[in-house]
Length: 575
Image 1 (cartoon, rainbow, N blue to C red):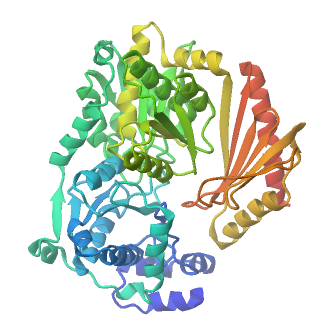
Image 2 (cartoon, one colour):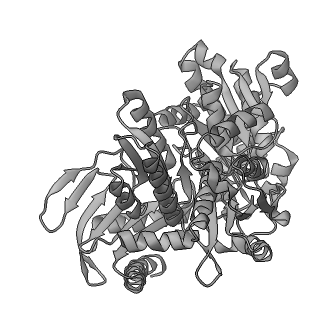
Image 3 (tube, rainbow, N blue to C red):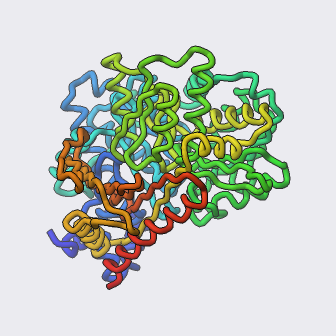
């Protein structure tokens, strides 16, 4: 079926909302093709896309279609699965509340119960609620830290984690059986309420979740320190829980960035609500200077990612990367647990294959095993569940370079609320010792080596962009570099074929992970870079990591590798 056939089908649909009709009428030919040439992709990260008309956009019809696929999967697992039902939460984005209700109205047609949050809530609370209510699945309506024109739909399994590939494939199979998403049936809300197929949940669950977070506290004395915190929810869901969680830990000096406190789908004070980017911290830094704050915190719209800024030795605020924050959290928690005799002999720390190697060095120093996973927090959650079932290892911490951290496994996704209170506790502890978190980070580098990582990405939208991304990855896979910036490439890890090849010895090893379209190149000096097409955005991402004996040598080495790789990529794109 061509895009023009799909366009005509949507144009002729009499019940199409007026807003979508207006958008269709205003589309250019190129915009029409991009919106109608394919179905918005659903995978292990759910689906995410620009809002608008067409099967390749987020709208009520794409939401209904994936929900029918989920419903079919639940029905295959019997009546008990239907009765256990689905928890549904949503963030502050355009259409989020409407899409959440559309999902419940679609599930109801199939006799599946929904527990819908009465207001916007963070993603980690959705994960917690699935586990706490013993639901069979969860739905989170969010586009995480993407710009305002995006929204998305994430599905969680009964363990509270995002779906593994096999389950996602089942849902996609059922979606592909749907001939016309425009004709899918939904039930009205009042009928769902009458039949007890919808229950609204809210504050009672908030308090249970916050009690669990309080239970993670390691050092109650630290909160008595006169620590000043500035927090911004970046117009998202974090305002619901982060301030109260900090207060529960005993922190009293908390300043909220007023202009960014209230939910707003347009995110008017930032170019993108992404705590990974410096522009998102501009107002928090202004507030920090006024309050002479020790710690600045920012969460993305669904409050699963946390960014922080701390004072350096000059008294200026510097933003820490996800790798740096993760290293500080890991070191603080392991040191505290070891001191208190709480560190189990079979402890494990989980990180992704593109997360800094500094975490491995820290964990090893405390006798904690490090296990690498594929990119995506669902793989960390999958390992946690496996270790729980087998009683094989004790989970201590999980993190990824993209500002996601998990401390307590009562949630099975990255959790910015947990991370916010623990990094505040770590900051307070350091302040008791006459140090800042920045001082603590420098101590880690002096003890373990000067690690540094970087991420560069290209956004290539539309059909042409997707083809270009595929060509870039294929070029590196089929014609790998033999050396970079004067250093030989020693190993290539191809996570799609599942092979690790040593170029110097010609030895091959099997990578014991699921297949994923990721390439990683290790240089002889321990530096590395990786290539990965994003599963949820029209991007190809390039990750870099180095370790040196001094900060200056670190900066130089990283710049050499990064510029060499990105120069080659730019030639592929523009020549």
